[in-house]
Length: 399
Image 1 (cartoon, rainbow, N blue to C red):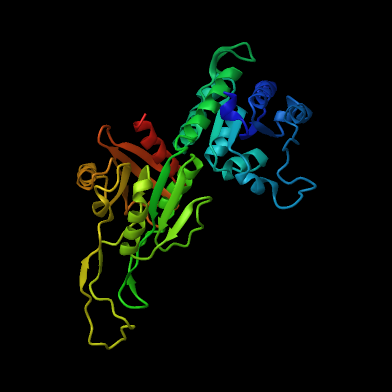
Image 2: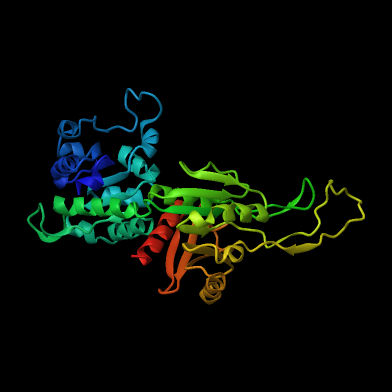
């Protein structure tokens, strides 16, 4: 257990529950297993246990105020967005889960939960009536749908001497969930991943081109998620306005032919190929060498089929191939046939006419289709979350 947690940077968020004192045992256990632990407390939590206890156990100052008197350099809650490998909220109250589910950021811990992109685990502890309340359950459902892990509370004696679901879980169970989450999140360690992303531009003349509305956000998110899960990642990207994913090799291309050449050059060394790019279906037959001017006798543009990259590399790649299919609906039969035609093990289906999803959006709503399983729907969520969920589905199917 310690080998998995050693060196991991974990933020433990402590909320205002009678079980707050039990978080000290969790912190000590995580420290013993080699984790670097920091604690953030809500104001209500300080009514149950003092910050000095956690400061002593962690050897770090406890984070308490969203706007401290001495803010130092930058804004604390923004600066920590990339500092931690995991956030564990233990105990998690109905209040904090409701805030996290609905993007409320009115105090430090709630704000942190709105900006971190690392895995987040909630450990509920509350009265059984609060746990089974419809609003609490709706928040739990919403959190789980967005990729957060919410551990079911234990059933047993509660602080009021009532018996029911809502009891803070035993430390061993919490640590096991944390360890499993870290083990799961590193499933691509030692693997090589090649991702294509963005549009291609097929020149008409030196200043005009044929392209599409792809932003590249889904492919970039898939590359970043693979890197976070331990893979060595190369990203072949058409023109985008995105920041390159951290610690990924970025290969910039313009045309479908250039993207094909980049993929061919690296394909044999890869374990996974994720074809998320929106490659042009057609390209001009004879691009003009000079700008076509208004009034020119040239009033039509002849087109030819652009290279089908997946078909071009067929027989050259022995790893796991994931194709993408953009459709106006969830026609899984057509997507499944496309998967078979292209020789892919998986195909990810998304729609180009769904509001707030797909092209140019930060969100997506997809289905992951494979040969052996029924289609798995990944409901509307930020593309960064969808990317991790896609990788989880792929790696889960290969267990």
